[in-house]
Length: 460
Ligand SMILES: Cc1ncc(COP(=O)(O)O)c(C=O)c1O
Image 1 (cartoon, rainbow, N blue to C red):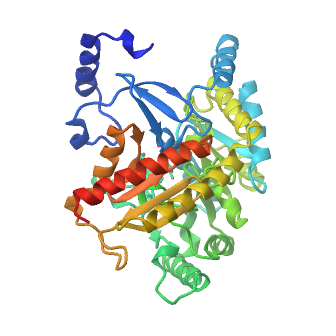
Image 2: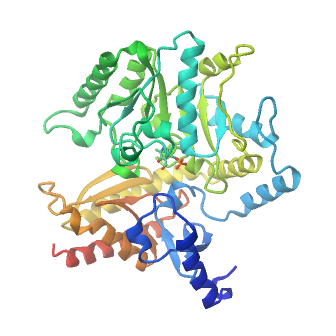
Image 3: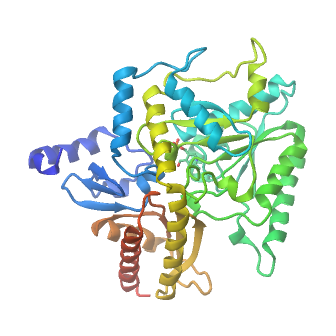
């Protein structure tokens, strides 16, 4: 409904009701104190609020809308499925046509022999499932003593309790401890932390040695799996791993019989300029989890995808089946929407566009850095980019936390019609894969103006 159809009273009521009747996910009371932001429409890379104001969304609606908002092709696919069979569960021995077609499509798209899917409703559930798969895999093979998981510091994997246990960022875990026992942590392994004078390859070796120390100290025979995001997410500004690290993790997991899980919930489906981030290092995990861009934001769906080597352990006669499931996992209409989203990504060459526009945006950001005094590291790849704001980029001195310069810039952008995600003083740039060069220019111009205003405000 166009915004002009809402009366003033109705809008005021919606604002009151939002705050009274809803707890938003990972709510910010500081932000909510300024009022609810209510969205009503979307088109392409743009969304519109209750007053009809347009925003260019540089965070692709929480990293989901890879093929843009409100695609008529998806509406048609969803409507058709709704009118044919809206839902039948993927339960015990029942399947639906879109679910089977989607599983086959995933098998074609995914690297290596990742070809057997378990469908769920969210990225958290996908990671939860991957952990259960790894544990039961070892149980079925007579290695019940393998119950531990290695995670990485500063990672994020899930909002659920099992997934929180392997999440390295303490903020997400600390109120809920004790969590699932057996989660241990290896260093984050970011090339940006490399000591001066050391090569990336040497730092990669050092990080791998530290990881192996953790494995050996814990006892390799007690470890079920390792879970990691090949490129950690927006929380830490998409830091790339040192050279050889990802390949080395694969070798270590093979050496010690550990199931390797790549969480590609954020990095999958083209955002790095490849279909999956692990392709950047020619490395295939034993289980890959996907969510977010997988469905294009149309209807929730996620998956844990594994190899026949693992899946066959659960298909080895009565009693070996994977003990996991939920009512709506692999919802029929969600599968139809996701298939259409993937068809659009392929048809319109959007993964290639992400590579092209990512390189363009990065180059524009590098140019912008030369004109500002507060831009430090520019990190990330493809359309997962971040810039770090620093009081003195020369020495790497951060702004005092109480300054809140990142939030100030986010708000400036919002007032000026652009949605920008910040995590403290890290600004994230991760638009939809459909972003055009002219939209990229608008984004850069907006950021440039916002940073100039911040430099004036904070006296830099
Ligand atoms: C890397 C990563 N893994 C898992 C998740 C959890 O996905 P969801 O929010 O769909 O449960 C997220 C969400 O932000 C994520 O970024």
